[in-house]
Image 1 (cartoon, rainbow, N blue to C red):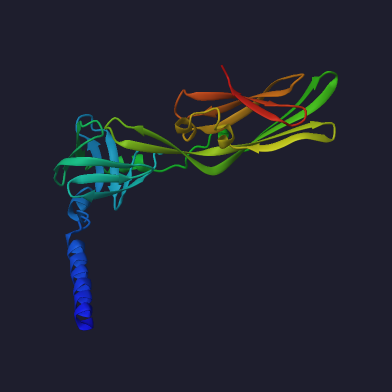
Image 2 (cartoon, helix red, strand yellow; image 1 turned 90 degrees about the horizontal axis):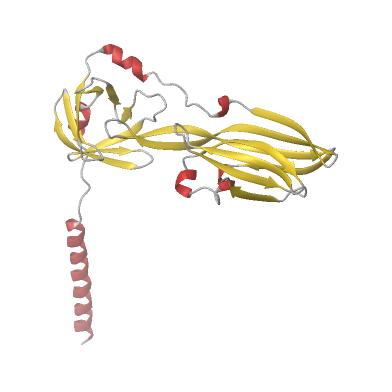
Amino acid sequence: MIRNIIYIFVSAIALLFIGSCNNLDKREKPVAENLKAKSMLEGIWLDADGENVTFRIKGDTVYYPDSMSQPVMFKIIADTMIFYGNNISKYPIVKQSPNIFEFKNQNGDIVKLVKSDDPNDAMQFVQHSPIVLNQNKVIKRDSVVSFSDKNYHCYVQINPTTYKVYRTFYNDEGLEIENIYYDNIIHISIFSGSSKLFSKDFRKDDFASCVPKNMLSQCVLSDIKLDYLDKSGFHYQTQLAIPDSPSCFIVKLAITYKGKISMSVAQ
């Protein structure tokens, strides 16, 4: 009896093991990268209509002639070109040969490119460092202001940082492009004589309650300027700008004489 029970138990375990192995075999295996198609893209590609340079492909990377646009890693899986930037973008390939490349952009339009044979086109890919807003340097402002016969020393310093801000847009060919900028940290100090009333480093996340999240991620904390004083305290205007765009959020920053902070969206 015991032998029968052991036999049944071992048989059940064996069946489960075989079944699991079969399931593993049935799992979809990852599709290998199409290295031949990828190697054919090596070089500089032009818009077939206007003969403007669209991008340059070297190894695993796509480069753009705009020095502000970030290079992006790419792969070709099956018949799709995939860009691995801040977002993953997929472009179905329509036609490919050593000198012709056609694919569908995000709008479903077919983009037709031809490979360049002009060595001068490489000059468009000389890379420059990304521009930091506010002149790429520390900016200091000292203001002495008065209210109710008292003098106050208001100090603002804009400090560039290495914190990256990505600005995503689509070029004329419908390719998703990322420009990169660097954010700022802005320090504010307020003194009455030798007494420090307030001191703080402001980052753009401090203004999250006043700016939509999807917009804040693309903003640079550009400036904080003293506007006026009144009986309630010091009133500043904060500028959160989206680079390469007319969009700019103005946030009113109020600091009381006791160092309390409040914020509101400028109307």
